Image (tube, rainbow, N blue to C red):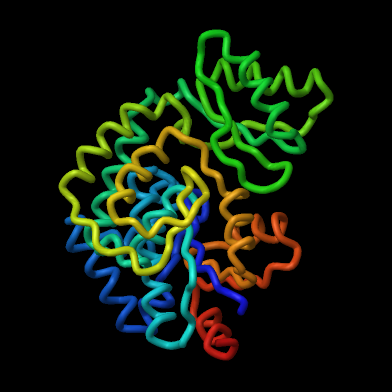
Length: 310
């Protein structure tokens, strides 16, 4: 029996106008954006529908904006089709969307938590002192060795294992720069700095992890009705008591996306449906599993296609 996974995008998938067509067309999506506005005390809906690219790029805005758009897509999909997930997963921030889908988080709690998480991650490191870089075509063990050599007392380490041959590193600007230079000196020419505002998923995020733990202490976790493949260990979790520790660990640990997709394939998943803005995860899954059946849903046309293929 083939299985289906719903996957939810993370930071970098945002774009101005996301979610507007769905909210204009479906009451359930419109109500969800209104719920986000009420929970946050400001017009997140206006930020998504009419905000500038630069405003949407601010981490404290990006995280609740992507989560809300993703859950709006989910709510419409549930209302309009019979599509169901056997497993759910999300990339970094997207893990919170997956946890809403699974029943572990209420939407209001999730959107408030990721607003705080974005703020904490931005404030963990002074702007301009940390960065990330995409390292292409380098095996994991070689890249880990390059990071150890480049560190020189600073922090630099793998932050995202995205797909075969695409690993992102994070750390202090000096150490990441040294890692790129070492990689190029060894013949790995495809290494580039990413336009990010902070070095996510490395040890420099420890202050953000500690502050997030404090916020999560105030949040009630419900039963996990659909297993969530966690970023931190790439394994299915349906134990509500593990949800918070896994989310805290995730802030300073690499996102094991390639390993998560491989794990889902091993569990019998053949179809991956990306819910939310953009097609980033669909592209990564295609590189991880050539046989995977892919769909991404972010607008009315995507919902219509999903209904026909249910």
